[in-house]
Length: 201
Length: 201
DNA sequence: GTCTATATTGGGATAGAC
DNA sequence: GTCTATCCCAATATAGAC
Image (cartoon, rainbow over the protein chains, first blue to last red):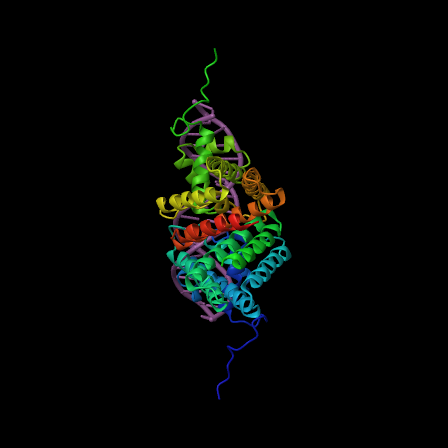
């Protein structure tokens, strides 16, 4: 009989070294950006050594950044899925989402914005891997919203278009809220997105 | 009679050294972010010396970054004013705006996003000056949109709220378009914002 | 897989001549 | 105001013992 040491509580610090590094990288890049986050800082805060970081990510900082973006992708995708499944009405789900994003921002003293956006800004010519991982994240999130809209009765084309706007507006509102240190952009955009979803045929 | 050497064509490279430095800093930080842009690179591309940079910006990189954000602020404020003044219908103006943003992105091969957003991401604990300059930029842009909406007949409260959503959604759509290397987010968000402005009361 | 030491490059910033 | 030389430090990345 095989024991399965991989099955551990996600919240304990009894995580594998690789997971600890990825999560720490994602959190730090969320707050400081890709360029502003050093590998040594990641190693120290993840309680790993520099050798371990390069053991798991031989591609160096770019490979680690790509993994961090993918982690942020899955993180928000989970929130999206959970919220869209819990609420029958997509408009209501959007209001819940803006509320959760606002809560996360305020509770972190306006430090924790979108982990994907923060990590991808300022990485244009270098590292196509990070850019692509970010594009895949946005596409996945749009797909989740579009699916929920279809389930709620929207035509496929409308659902696809509205998903663009929902994800884009959430992104922008979170950025505006973070910069302005106020939840008002998120709350207002949430109300207007709900209005849009309810009046769009 | 006094000659006025300050009055020069804005496009010639016969600009003052300080202006050349600020514009170069803004353009580079727009593409590479604040942390990813070095003072030496700014000096070189602005055809100035390191000594000149520190002469005009004794506060170093943070002071220069703040000036760069303010420059980006005024740059987009000019576009906003011009577009909102040229179109009577705010909904039409928004469609023109998304078109111009899309054009700028595509023409730069998806390199030139929002200069304020790019420069401010990843500068949380350090440099409150940059953060504040970015907050002031967003507030100014919202004010311009709100004023135009009031002129078009919206109630003041509605105008203020809708301005939050217009600016936030434009920010998010530009980011989504840049990451996805597609104008579709901007075009779609433009249509939905126009719909929102036309159906909101 | 983990750890330490180190090579190497480039960063921000300063000094002082002109 | 402009320019060059330089200091100091942090960054990424590597080597090799354990």
